[in-house]
Length: 187
View 1: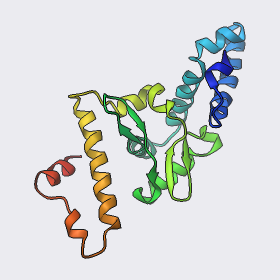
View 2: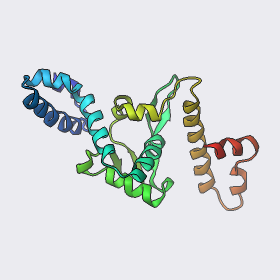
View 3: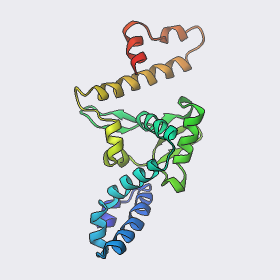
View 4: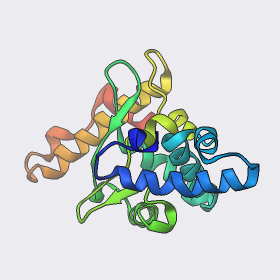
């Protein structure tokens, strides 16, 4: 059952590394067989959500606020609700958030993020679908004001990228004006 849940993707080994110790601990603590323990922890996806919640709980209050903003930036709104993984440029983040991203990519933090030289992304797309706290942050149901915020945030990020890449003469073309400025200000 575990192998079927994990599949053959290279990144899935990390999910297995989360699930197995949690399964073993649950089995020993609750005196149940390993298969029942595996089901009780929520299988591989449940172990990932538990690990994420555990890591989040150990962050400082400032890091928790930064973590929410960071994780929200690492998804794109789906067409019919939900969200999909987004690879962000590391230079989109301030220094403190970059440091947090690197921290969350460490083994001790269950490698929730993957940080490259220029990019940062969630390590497992299942994080956005299985971790309840993350789902709350990125709620994206049609008509949900927070979902509208996610779409607006992504538009702002794209506008900022275009502005950054533009030459000095072209930068004014990408300044927010009128209604866009009001919307971005409210974020």
